[in-house]
Length: 75
Image (cartoon, one colour):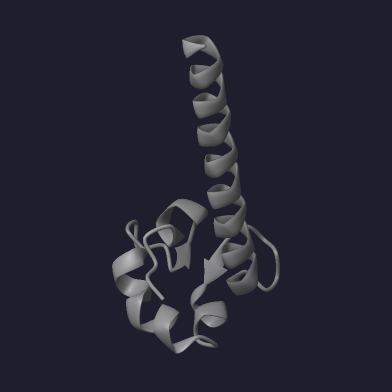
């Protein structure tokens, strides 16, 4: 019984992580309008909240946001 409960718990965690990751992908894709895998400053100008946070999110100062940098974006 403990093994069954542990298996279900693990399965729930995997499914939850997958759902959260796919939601982040959808959000990122919404802002990455040219689908090049980065959000440029030009793309960000179309979204006030993202533009306001862009400089803080762009950790390496390359004027584009990677998916990792975008993860810290707050709506």
